Length: 171
Image (cartoon, rainbow, N blue to C red; front, side, top):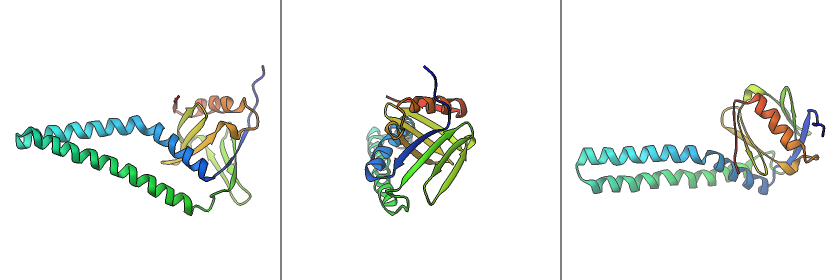
């Protein structure tokens, strides 16, 4: 079997369903990092409360407040992400993502954006697509069914793996 050659093109429509899938994959990709950070903060607060007050129940109260403070931003961020998406100019537009040895090119009739590989900081491969983080904290979800050829998602992942340092796979 021959490997298809670059460029590989995926066509994605930024619909509400695409947005929901992208947010779900972004949360799954960052879940372990958030849990680790939250765990460290909670242990630190509990130990600090125990040593500062000498009463164990103060630690539990602070622990409860910390859990509340940790979950509230997640709930708010989902709401803010949704509001921001509803205001986006590219909502419901069809984008073509072209992967090549030079990097990623995203285009519509009105836009043409080129990203060199050094702008892509992280990539996470899920069973149904690829989540790419670029230019700091911007993430783009490209589902496997966006490619015309079913062999292209795997070829794109191999290409990304060659050029991006932080690459992982999720079930």
